[in-house]
Length: 491
Image (cartoon, rainbow, N blue to C red; front, side, top):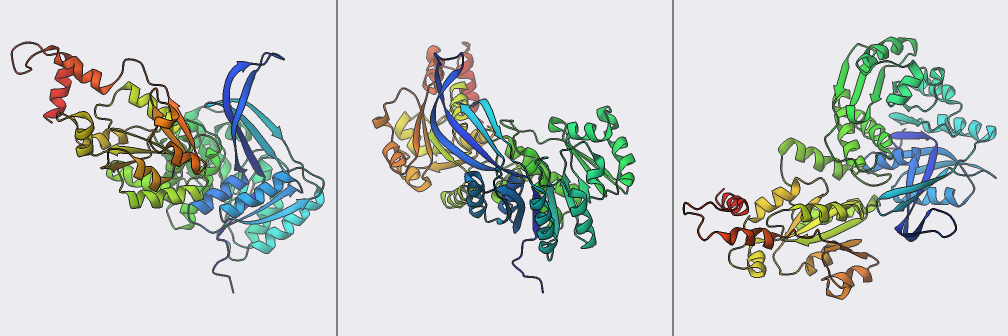
């Protein structure tokens, strides 16, 4: 009898550890013409097959990861990360060998260097992986084979044959240009470069035709090609073609996007979605992943919220209890929460740059928004120019903003206490002791970031520019700024 709690999706392949050393550059080394990075923090995230597994689990499916790693510190880090993401880890230890690790050095938001420590895999470890693979197939509804050509899937044809004997569909993310290695998979998901390496160069508008010719030859049911900004193309053995455009989002970092697509695609299929709908879900999940820095784990909450916003065109304004639940879920997935606040009455370039810079300090940006009464108390009886709903809607249109939450107090202290951000961002020329909530955040292990303001941009200055005319209702021409203000007030 199958265990009801057994993993429904098994991920097999080359697991990696992605390490990020993050700091700032202030000078060039006197030893060589290279930047000196003053390291501020270090992050560790799952990579390769481990990233696929973490995404599967975060999207709500029970998941196990079968991989090979060395008996080293990186292998221990992998174990801790999989435990954090609630992934069952079945790791074949290969004594004396190294676990693959990629270390990225980040200055501000710019990747300065990447240092790779590639692992290797022995024959005995591969044989043991194949043995464990067959033993783990009972009750599994789908197998994802994540091939990064690091050695774990050298015997991939054997694994595909075993899965076919057990009637379990296999979803393969390829790396090698040897098409025989992937023959017999249920679904093959190359990116455009991998597709051309496997099947020969062809024009973009001929990819579907080329794919159709290889499906029978390779005994594939589906071929899904991810094409970056050009979207996702699916061709089935039955002749169906789905050409799905990319979700229009700001691209910050494409690292691991293919892992997210595979995870979300297979989760959708396992949950009963038609393949076209599962591709749509995967496309949305990839859009979330590339809008965040570094390797990113997309949660079920992330995906449902983005789908809901897209389908209903609603703002990102949420009540605090709902926000708290979303942030708790994000934290479980390893996200760093960033918080900033303000009135944001007449949004200008300084605001946009501040929010973009704030978002780059972590993974989720929450904006605390003064309600109308508190804006009036702080700014005077003629403010706000735009009411809370309008201000929230404008902020929601920014890709940098993930959530907006209103507060009625004059300061955001209680909101900061409830959210417990990892990073508190404040714009302007502030001393640390003048920033509300700074001590609270720092005492909880967080950091405070003071962002420089864009000179000459402020809501007050914009509104003051409109006072050069005495009466906008007279025949005198009002300034453009005042005209815009009057138009907004009379919406």
